[in-house]
Length: 126
Length: 230
Image (cartoon, rainbow over all chains, first blue to last red; front, side, top):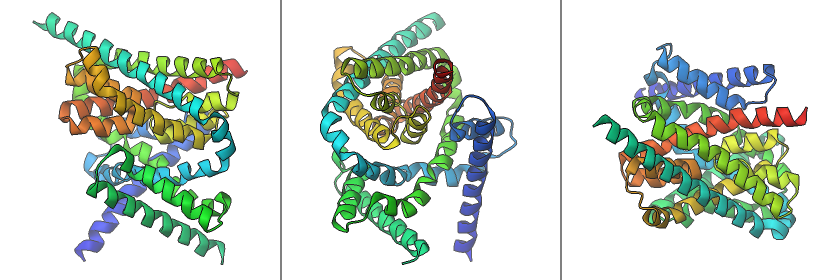
């Protein structure tokens, strides 16, 4: 009985997240810029949490489940690469080099700038 | 076999492969045993050896993919829980995140242009620094390819983590908050998982920075695309 109760509670939490996703998708189809519906749903839920319309306990368990097992959700997508083997054979290395280089620039810039601003903030507080 | 049972079969196979991959990752923890890496390789081999087309597999795969949307919605929970950190460090967090988002787009696209890659590939590179589901959405919006985008997100995550230690040493970055922000902005979920192993502050900073970058990119890209396309 306890297991059934826990499980239906989890399903209910997942249903709330799905609901926000659907509302986000709906809004996304109304606005002229195609902002992903999932992101709109995320921002809406954030607002509802902030204004106490939704309590964090209502969604926390379901959200944790989805976040922890997100890698599972990537597997079917990545397997889609099977359709692009020719493209990867031709440009794969270039893509990897470009991505790695750009990633490194982002990493270095963001952490350097952040550290500099952080030290400024700390010294101005003193 | 009816479509229903075929979908169910492919869902079960994917779940089974994922659970095995997760098990491997707990027994032998390393960057190259991350479940979506090993899981994808095994699934691709399964599809090739069982002579299954990706189209047929997608009958089941689509049911799993669907949950990416609600999973993004779920990211609001860690962001909400970190709201105090976010507000306290709004400047050292927000400014680098905005700059990093633009730098990621500009360098990715311009390097692709220099290398003479097609527009489809260029737009598949563009969202590489943000978490997979959002990167795929953005790639689709821009007419890039979602699978390639997902692959490059993976490459960005792994390379970001590989470069992290040496970069922090070269540039003398010793603040955990700054390290976390860099990892989250450049290497999204993979960077955040890595940052969490180095402590709570770094993990929290990385998680906030990853989510903010994803929100910024998903708001800016379509607007920029809208302005250029119409």
